[in-house]
Image (cartoon, rainbow, N blue to C red):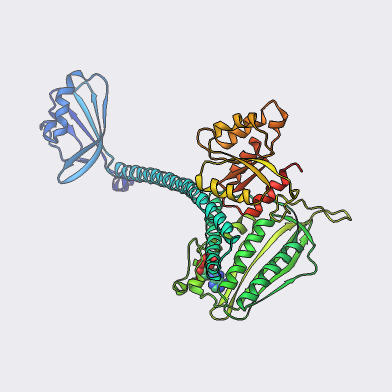
Length: 512
Ligand code: ADP
């Protein structure tokens, strides 16, 4: 009874063909091909030609896999087995067309996915290489720019100390503005490159939030007077005076937002609100809000303003509002490093509110106020004895920086100065002459400044070994600074530096 259904459901995909020793068909079922007894096997399909060359050597079974056979306009993909029997040969043809087709499709998509994976890996490697190239380019590019900019800033300063007509003074003040804008732009480009390459590391320390907000108040009240836009500040009374965090980066974030608020507000006011959110264990959460009554940002543009170099087209012909387009992406990057996020609410022609929450540590304080050590603050008073002269060795190969620094140092009347432009001459000079301080460019020809510093620090004579060395570098990467200090430099100044900063640093390290 079952036979009928079995036949219906049995997949007829194996054909058995029995031939004599000459390949003449003796018997066959008709599962795949229609085969007539007494026909030659080769007449079914040219593939069986191989049989005639095989048959004499055939002792064991032989299987051919994945044999494509065209038969009656249909393609079969088969496995074919030849076996020697007493009557002749048994040929077993198994039709695996669907099996092989599926397998091929799987293999193909597997290969495609491997190829895609490899393509992605190649693309990633290319992107990484491009990023690396960009970082190196920005480093070198800023290095190249810093030297001439140092000269320009210094010459402008020297010029400003000379007698000038009011017209000249006017032009000079434009020059000074442009210099400081250029310096800020260079700093911005470096900041963004350091943030994106992960080289910017936070430096947490104890600081007075009160002092920070006072500094901001002073700066922006002055700006408010100049611009005619008011500035107000409110700090929640619950906020403790001292906190631990990265003061410099918090300051950089706030000044970027406040500068923008002033830039994009023509009338009304800019307000900074510092609110207390909560305190848990010794972690204190604060909210900073920069609110302005300026031109606002439309909803369509809100997302794009945080991208690097993005500036909204609407202001492009207003030069007063031209910035680098980097401010907000720096803010975003800095806050990201500090575990926070910048948010904005804005309405066109009404104004904008940029705000973020930040978690700072609350230090465990004794009754006395903590002592905050200021590291090389620019505001250090120049503490040199009036009328005293110090012997200074200037090692600098860039002729412009050399001239400018030489002239400036001379004009202070504090120094006898010797000049060297090659690192290899330094040791000889130190043995022959006595010096109170050395200003050393790091990037010198033949022997670099940090290598010379190492030689000096390893020198057996105390009077040479101990001479304070101030490094001058066009690089402003943290890693470089660390390496130069490790080499034995007492301090490192990043070009372009202000003369006050140079004098404050010299004053700090000179024996008085
Ligand atoms: P920029 O140097 O152009 O100010 P930013 O990255 O700081 O670059 O800002 C990007 C853009 O976001 C600005 O060009 C401006 O269009 C918009 N923007 C930023 N802050 C404000 C604000 N307070 N009010 C209105 N628009 C702003």
